[in-house]
Length: 194
Figure (cartoon, one colour):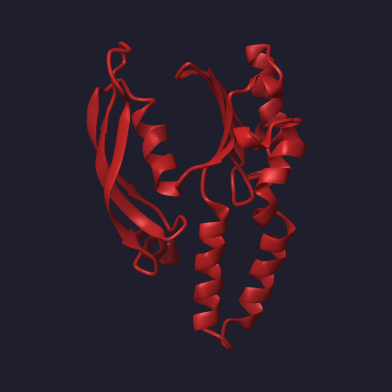
């Protein structure tokens, strides 16, 4: 099974390819575009991953995006509307970005990699993406999980547990059992001072 992971339209766009849970290739788009923290669609990073595996986009079983854009858009709308009219300038800038790219991620993925089947494109909770990328790349069979960043869809920090059956004898599990929600964010507090 081939799974392609994609992150884009915020900062440091990237792609990663897994085959049966094993890392095949990973690359940041800036490696190819030479634009520091490139946020555009990672077309060249995707091509690198596919070429490394010797497959085409239609050989992929799934393409997974690192967050759920509609939930994040809901948070942004509610936040800006609750602060209106003070937020109208920032709201306008945010809408340009969202209406230009972020709401249409599925079609950008389909066009950007030449994928025929839209049903292969999945969206994963932002903090589950953080947790999975850390745990499933580790050698551990079980771990406590803690993710902290600015904000995902609504979550700013999450806790949980993860287990892995590396020998194929069981099921891999990632359970996020608690969260801190926006606007309460250690990540945003940290970024305000740095």
